[in-house]
Image (cartoon, rainbow, N blue to C red):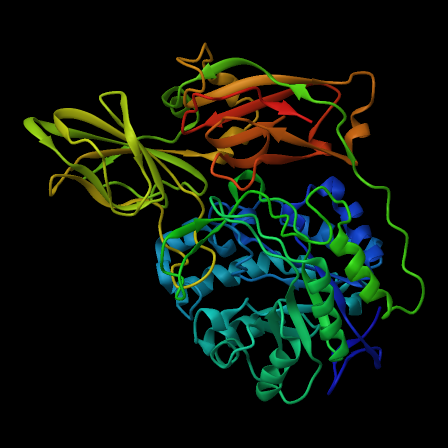
Length: 591
């Protein structure tokens, strides 16, 4: 039991000044069996607190149907066992380079940009969700013997909007739901962000990666008293598909951390351990100063060049930050826990079956519907996955350009069953014209919903229409395939597998990997592996029914992280959903 409050200059625990040395670790990006190890790594680095977001879309995939909301409570219990306090940032929007910024697709599909405002329908959903979620937090607050010291109101709202009534509703809602610990907001250290995202009586904190003194000077202009805190010290950064891998120098990160602490401030290192965007939950950004340009999808790895890497190992940055944090401890730092062991050797998968995408869609997809214009992913209730659109080109008519308006995000096009090309811009046209009559299929994949900026909440799929010359083609048949359809026990077993039409053909591959027998499955609990797919195109992989996430030849990511607890001694089942087709596809292997 304890009393945590916001003083005039410091955070106070039972009346005594305390500095929060926190690190971000998202429970939904780490396999639950490895939470304890990762939390122990934070403690060994010199941190006394852990911070996590809460992704609404993970826990409420359909309106009013909840999935494992108790996971947050279990994580907070694990933090307490590790000797860490906790900061919870429940949203409802979280950014986090996460699909749709954590907002459910069914919410933004209906409300669009009415989300994150005082719109009555939006707030009704938020009220219901927080009423379900927040008991996990309330019963674990520090004044009830738990680890939770502070809860955030929304997230970086000043980077998005200026509806102060909405923020006030959320702050009041948190109190109504039993949150008694201090509330805070976090925004970039700029005037328009702090005026748009902060609230009187709620502690404002700042997010930045450098220039700590200047950032805190701006914060002080808006908040003359109260403890200073950097809620997100960006010690690294995330990767986009098709771009260079991002690295931040360890010494430079350590110097900025030292500067933050020399200002007398508290800090939350973002990320202390990044983890992985499993199961296609990666978000996306839009390029440009106003974040309205070309889509930039986020990679599966969320390693973030963090001090604790994706596999749970200490990096050079870990030791440099540990040296800085050691100066702010009352005693010696804890020893590091036993380190994760990489799976020994290379184990090739035996791919013994293949099914075409159409065959997979027939078994695992939703019902096909017809409408004058293409249905969006949201209208088909597809959060992560793909949609097949089919439309007839009337005939006879001469060849004309065939194009798509409002494509989000990528379409592989077939004309009369033959692949005709790939479209990857919002308004795109096939290289070769199409004559009528013909049947056109467009397999459209979402590369991640935007998680930051004014384009947040935009729909996926074909959001405009299919054009032949300048004429809309009507009577579009649409059918969706959700990624979580593969998680249904026994569902994939119903797919009819045979031999691939050609090496690397698009479709679902089934295979097996044998791992050393004779050892109990628990032997892999503190281990990890990499799954390698040299020469493959773009798609998703599952190991023993666990979705590792998206792979893509464009890089920079070349392998997928495999948590050891997913593996077992003996036979391990592997599914590869290849969406692009790759003539150079080589062996799939674990190692």
